[in-house]
Image (cartoon, rainbow, N blue to C red; front, side, top):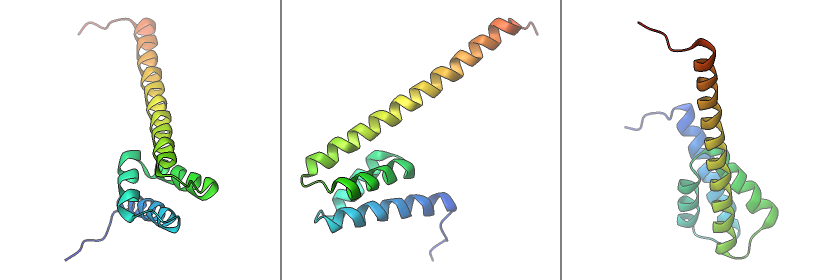
Length: 102
């Protein structure tokens, strides 16, 4: 018996299927799309890859892999930036309030 997908699962599935479909239209196997989607790590990143595939129509799988790595690098940089901002905010709060004694 199959349980219905949660909205998050449905979003992941739709993004993955969209990428696989776009890559298959260019002649790539479905497994290639699955691997690319798994590496990208989020539906938003997968949709960015779909946009790239539709616009560029890459002729070589290396071009797709390079774009995947570029997207992954940008996502990683964004995460590091957000982590640094959170750490900076916590540090500024510590400077403002000082250490509290219990």
